[in-house]
Length: 247
Image (tube, rainbow, N blue to C red):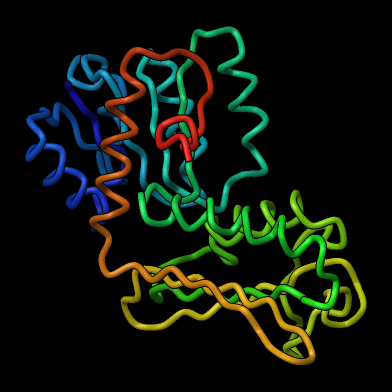
């Protein structure tokens, strides 16, 4: 298939390598210095565009692709306040879009485990959840999109947890479950070139249970994005990564 890349940084280069290795053709690469390429025959020829850019540019990139009739697989996080607008644009079937906070196969297995564990913990109120996510220093948003998805899963499966919060300057969240509230605290760490680590602890007075996913490289995310673009090739409308992996 023909693929366009929107965002040609580290992730874009890794996606390119994996896509070419799977027999696909990269027909167009768009970055900050050549946005005029959205209005090009090369871009319009793409069967799918894979978007990994920045929170500030993602929404406009998606809309530009839609204008040219090109489906989009998007892995940029930090812009989800605009997701309802993108869903509305896909509602009539004239735009095709797939979003994931994380395309890694391993992370999506981890998310399935997270849902299952949270549903068990719904019956054991003595356990309180807490999350820590660690990423490289170049990641602009926090908490990570993956952390938010994990937290939303826990809130969906655990009646005493209604959402998530980040700590204030004191390192605490006043409304966290740890402080008698109903929110799960998410701490974030930005260090070196860490691809991504997510740890969820369920803590009681007598013990704790922890699950962790630790990415070794960005290649797992890139492969998942290419797999998603392959899956999306004959689809219309709005889709999520759970439809691809079916966990």
